[in-house]
Image (cartoon, rainbow, N blue to C red; front, side, top):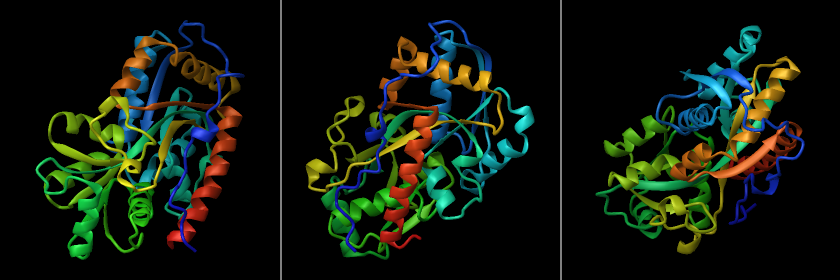
Length: 325
């Protein structure tokens, strides 16, 4: 079965208005929030948690925010920690994204989103393939040509396990370019920061990563973004060409959102959702969002659950097509 060249595992179809969400009306609704981050510093989860905390506290919706990085097990260590210590997690939100669906499907960890309290999906981040700024590769066509010349020596890395999201994005791009989506050498790293370090040190020739993670280093002249999985160029870094404009028919946006411990009381959950809902209307959030090139996607509560169930089905079908399940 041939994978459709337009892969739309996006949250765009699940974008909803903030209807039904409790409103904070610009007032502080939580004294404090503790953000649990399932990966290391410098990755997309880290940036999302810290950016959200900065906006919430800066806008006065949350009194103070603290952060804890807890790597391991493809995110499973942090998920298990939250579940096992649920009674002491009353002010904690864990950031996660599409990998919680992927890694549950592949059995990287035994839990799924169903074992947590769903707070809200908040943003989307496009994916990108990048190379060092001094690389001879200047386009997706160059990348494909380098792979065709010597497939065994050509490695694409990512901040996820084999069969994880970064791997899937690279596979989508290669398939859409007419290559075997399972034929290239994928090198996994624990979180995006480590993967970017591997790229800059020459361990890999290209990196599959979140667009927001690549923008800062691209602006600093450290990396070149070969292609973005957006339908059109993103304002946050308009120099980066899309896959689509290079005749690689792939669109993809990775959602990111927040989860709380199972059994958390309804009032606290409602306050968490209200703070996030109110955040979108603040200049503090718009500053953070624009700097990172994120797309506003708000899926609170039951809408978040419905979206995750649908994505689980979509991703499962894709991974079976590619031979990852």
